[in-house]
Length: 180
Ligand code: IMP
Ligand code: MG
Image (cartoon, rainbow, N blue to C red; front, side, top):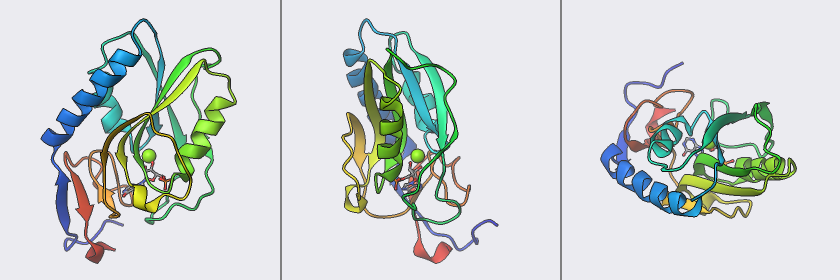
């Protein structure tokens, strides 16, 4: 069911502001991966917009793959019980791997994923995350490349959803409390 027309959306970062951040991140990543051909893994579904924008700014040879983790479902809280529901196809043994994530909130999902991938024996494993919501962190997660820090609010747009709605918004918006 879709949220009611009363849902309030307040723009936190415009698509234009995000594109500047993404280009900056891409420059930093491009400097780190000179002479390498990493596998860039996007975390579905939330990271699909960020992944598409980021890789088009990465100026080195790369391959892409996607992984999907169990999600929030239709609510706003992560359970802490994470599992892989769609795995990568490529082998990552001995490869340089860069994980691309939309947002690190409690940290449960990404800490699970980084451990899961580390066990497969990559040559290197790094994390690039567009947004960091540190006030909600439950698990310590080292993030190699961060776009920007966000407040403890529920966000939608630029790939992020609430019950599958709003992923197509070009801006990152705060979803008002009156909407659920
Ligand atoms: P975690 O709490 O760090 O495990 O976050 C898990 C996933 O929930 C993230 O990768 C996002 O896809 C999603 N998520 C976290 N915070 C938000 C939010 O504010 N809005 C929409 N999705 C979110
Ligand atoms: Mg995500």
